[in-house]
Image 1 (cartoon, helix red, strand yellow):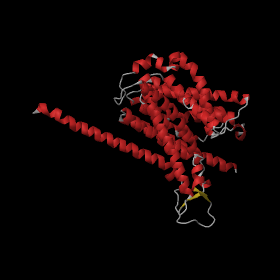
Image 2 (tube, helix red, strand yellow):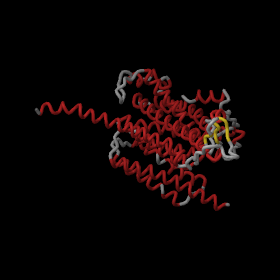
Image 3 (cartoon, helix red, strand yellow):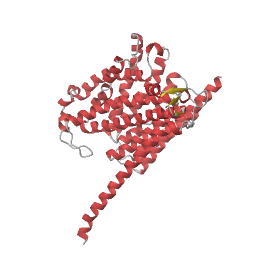
Image 4 (spheres, one colour):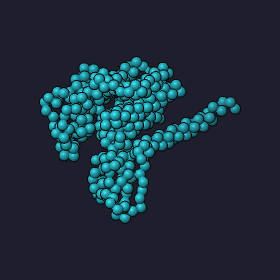
Length: 417
């Protein structure tokens, strides 16, 4: 009788495992829906619907609204939409746009992280993966400029030289991130990268001489403490991942601080350097900066990855989900990760133009939580209780930092009036 008990329990255990996975997927879907809707529907003032068009209400046609759908506006600048027999209130029209921006941001970010991790697991070539992240989107950028869908930036030789250090920092941040993603658990890498605001605050004070209120810096204590607490128990912790994530944090935070100083004197209307165009310039410049390092670190064959020994070694193996790794599988992951990287930043800029910086920061923190959940579900990367507690403290600290920064920034502005 006992000999039969274990086999008979196997279907039951498998059924429980399948139910657990379904529950986790449901939780992820719920988290995604909340994350997409919260920034536009909950954090800002909720829209109030009105049965008819009040006297003096400014409206726009449905055609105009759709034609300008990818041209974000703040809530107070959006007009109501005349749908014929129904007037869509301005706040609701704005909420639909903004929810779409956040949804696209999260959607492409999840695709980027999953495809990126799959390519890194299969090939183990983080420098090539970094090149894919910046180079794959270049044809899209050139297409947008060539068709006039986006204004082409106009820079002088002096401005190009001023901008070059920012390009190098973008490339360094990108490479550091990919090395960190490939060296250990994807979710924990994002926890480590949540320390970026701490570096930005430090470099901002050191470089510009403009220090923030002490309360702002005090909110960084739980960020660093949470990361340290989580690191102490992380099962997959290794110093390569930690160091690479810190390089990424330093690169991206310095990029943010220096780019503001470099472009402070630029006439944005002349240079056409809005958010998406600045990112496009960073992508193109980083492509040229990254290529020689790919050759130096992974050999010239990495530029033609199908010739690289790692490519040949990966063919025929199974990925984390049991799928066969084929040449088309590898090409798909490389291209998809690069395109999704470009598009998720594009969507993030749309969201930033539609909401306040604090709302955008909150949305960015929710995004990190969604990515951590996604990595646990898709890649089966476990997090123990201490790691989850530490990660939650760190991400919560970033949220407090955002609130404190916004509050004391507003206090300072009122004091100047």
